[in-house]
Length: 164
Image 1 (cartoon, one colour):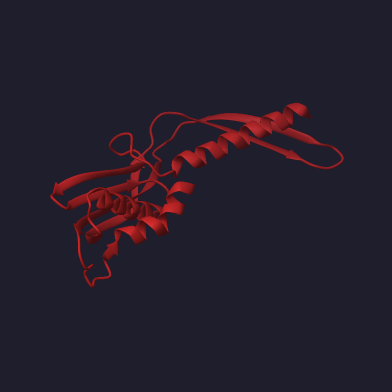
Image 2 (cartoon, rainbow, N blue to C red):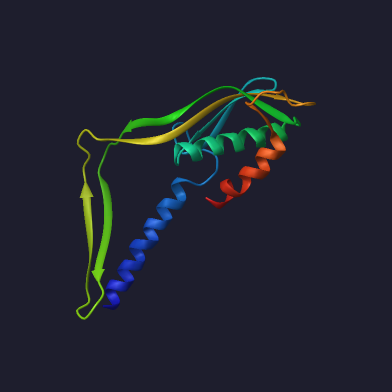
């Protein structure tokens, strides 16, 4: 029984660690990796991309990054002049290892841990992606539903971005 508890705690810890790393806010390590990236298009205009999490989370994190960039460049607001988002399909390659555990509670406690190796056969996985092209400005914010106060977005989305 003690071995089951240790194994179960290990499996749960692995699961939580993988969830936390897949949806946390931060820069992408490389092209196509989870996280944000940006490209300066011209003075005051950027393309902001966020990959990972759900489509809603990718949108929020892209907006949050846009607010960070706007404030870092001493602007007050940004306007989303174009956006696209959804699920980006990518073929998985190579073997994948999975660990699982289970048990029953009652008079006869039984449990087990299993380890498996899977090989994808024509399968694909998806990653949420949001791409925003933003224009930054100072002074009065345009009367446009796609114009945002950088301070307001940074404040309202900060807890979401930092808690993931």
